[in-house]
Amino acid sequence: MSAALETSALTKRFGKAPAAVDNLSITVPRRAIYGFLGANGAGKTTTLKLVLGLLRPDAGSIRLFGKPRAEASARIGSLIETPSLYDHLTGRENLDIARRLLGLPPREIDRVLEIVDLDRSAARRRAGGYSLGMRQRLAIARALLGSPQLLILDEPANGLDPDGIRDMRTLLRRLPEIGDMTLIVSSHLLSEVELVATHVGLLHRGRLLVEAPLDQLRGDEAVEVATADPAQSARILIDAGFSVVTNRPANAPMLVTGAQPAAIASLLVARGQSLSHLSTRRQSLETIYHDQIGRAA
Ligand code: ATP
Image (cartoon, rainbow, N blue to C red; front, side, top):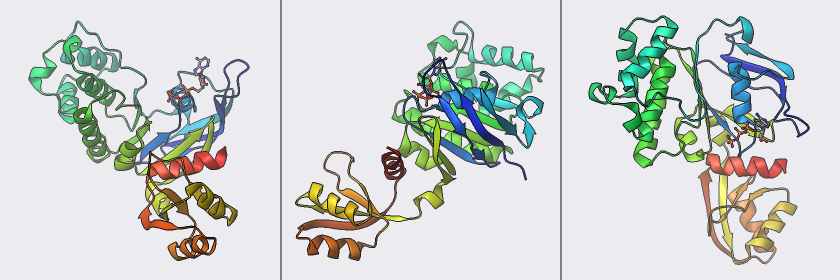
């Protein structure tokens, strides 16, 4: 079965700067929740705008459900950057305008309100008085009008408080189950992506560093190592060909991948390092992210 989205050698330049999207080939399988990751300026929004036809590529191609982008009849819902809502209108009126433009029946509004869990009394209130979380949900409800096969959300949890983030997570997880839907979600919140994504694509300076099912990516266990002289220990491990992540949150031990714990311990001890901690853990997306970015640099 053809992928929901396939880009091939996609390239986009703005002026003389290095290409914002550089020879990018990604594949988003159907029914995936594809976490699209990368630092600020990595090219995520530009890629998503190219997919939506809001920007024209300089080179490369985009296929949606097996067809060239321009010929694809599949409906795509999207929420890119901050949601543009009519603040003086109610939530329901906002949806009604979009519904009419799409030529959909009125009952479609209740369907999407229910999915995003905006109740009827909230839908009767002016959107201008909504919290950011409610605005995001209303904008997603609007993107869901007409049951899109592909939903593209750019930073849907941006700026939300912990409750809002949790609600967004619940909603995102539910979406592929509601219909035959594929989700692409760009985000900086690695711990969030880890909780919802089935697949991950990591972008760095417009290029794809890694793309894989999340389970596969997390498959290798990492070893946490703390010693009296972490800098020296890291050098020893790197010289021995192990992959070491040191730029971790304050006081967190370094992470070593590509080696068994026993091999790490005996190497460090043999080189006179004093070990204070050694444990194995499954790789978090954060580790994978820093590891991949570190290698690219
Ligand atoms: P963020 O996480 O900050 O949203 P991003 O990964 O979405 O980042 P993009 O917004 O796609 O990154 O930007 C990629 C690069 O392209 C950046 O260097 C940005 O400055 C540049 N860029 C994006 N849009 C334009 C534009 N309209 N004109 C000129 N440069 C642009």
